[in-house]
Image (cartoon, rainbow, N blue to C red; front, side, top):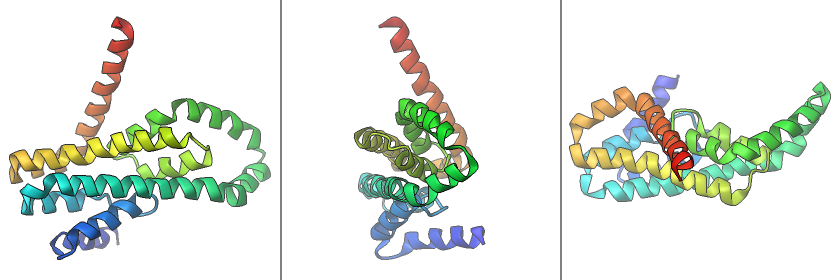
Length: 193
């Protein structure tokens, strides 16, 4: 089933309205859809390298808007669904402590989920449940999703088809490496500044 969904999503890259399809896939992937928009970005940029930046921009904006929808799901449905379950199991006090912890580190959680293969939709919904600051959520989402989609589009724009194989084969490792380098950069700034 997942393979059919993947193949169907990939076939949308050839659609005459592929940019709109990409926006839709990017939007719903940020809150409910299991297939990342990268599988559309890759063939779309390879087919029209001169539109790489527009493709990455549409994908970023739609993904952040979809992330806000995921935030809304968590924020508005928590009271009706989440809280009664936590109270039934006696975890409501523990959730309060978790919420404080998450909100202290939420910007990092959003950023890391936004650039890595970790399901971004989980973090968007969790951010709404914990009522993470909306500006922090939006800024972290824009930075993360922008980095992810513009790096992929930029590599494809610069190197063309040969980089596609490399990206598809090493996407997870590249995302993790990027996060490690980013965290190391912040540590170095704190130590030396």
